[in-house]
Image 1 (spheres, rainbow, N blue to C red):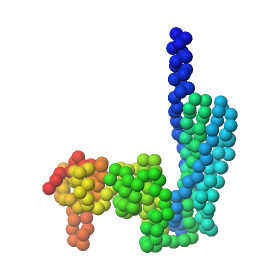
Image 2 (image 1 turned 180 degrees about the vertical axis):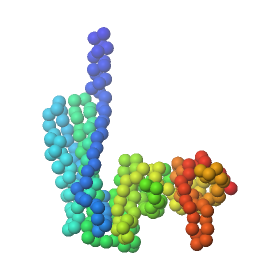
Image 3 (image 1 turned 90 degrees about the horizontal axis):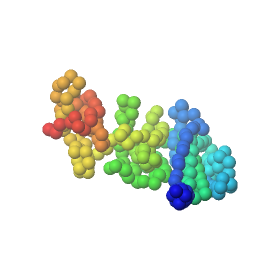
Image 4 (image 1 turned 135 degrees about the vertical axis):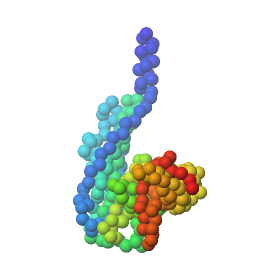
Length: 253
């Protein structure tokens, strides 16, 4: 019995584990239209405790991580931090606790307007956040974003934490960025890989049954693993209705 107890205790101390927490806040009000997101920045600090001794207090660790961010990305005139995220990852191994604190934020420029020619230049300045492609989507892909029953055209700039970071225009020529769920991002260009992954392609003609039980002919304008954006009842001057339909409810023509 005693040997079993020693074995359990030994296994506990010889295994490591990790816990992650995070929070998000904002240090700037983005309610006006005279701003643009110009860069994504991050800073980090790592501390270690042995038997609970050592390291810094929580507020001091966050402060040092923020200072590291500002050293790497010094703010210019008219710039502020927005959408500030604090992520804390603790790893336990034997009696040593390692804590990695990361502060990340959007750098927002006020009072400066961007034009469409700056789109690519701003994208090049953004950190792509570990991955350059996820599930048939790549950094710098032009895509459709479906959110709040609206379709927005955007460009992918990274893949933070299983989400898609996109850059798109609002309020005229102003630029803004957002992290969206992968299910809200749609391929907008035809590609043979779309057929391999989804069974359908952009610009393909299909049919679907409407809520009125009638069968409609439609054309796919956007697609992902879950559903397709369809335009139908196409009339004069290219006027049309559009609808999001699950892939399982589509029929090939």
